[in-house]
Image (cartoon, rainbow, N blue to C red; front, side, top):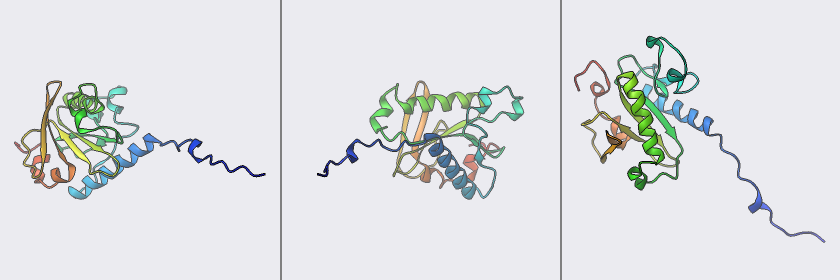
Length: 174
């Protein structure tokens, strides 16, 4: 006599390698920025984005954020992938992952004396950009917020990348 039990519901889900997922997202964003700014200077930070804060390096060698950027780029870039359970209501929760991400980006921004660009990608959704560089001429929907005294603007990354290059470079007064 054969058993006719279906054991599929009891099988464990395949574990997702979040580090690999994050690395792929960082590479994807670096490629997107290289194409947008017609350069090859954007690339992943060696080791991790925390490299500058976990190693004793001379100031000229410190790299903040998840991506190495051109020397005249105004922003440090933090990339976060996943966090699919985060919702709009989490923007109002000071203990949410989004608030923690902004706090981390803000700390690195202060240390580097640059503005931050936090890029968040969720599965099957367009990446969102959060920055402490206010009044960017982004067309399309945007949100304004204050997270633990850090004023930010939030918009779709694709809308941000439509603005002029001068808004991304340090040698401009914008």
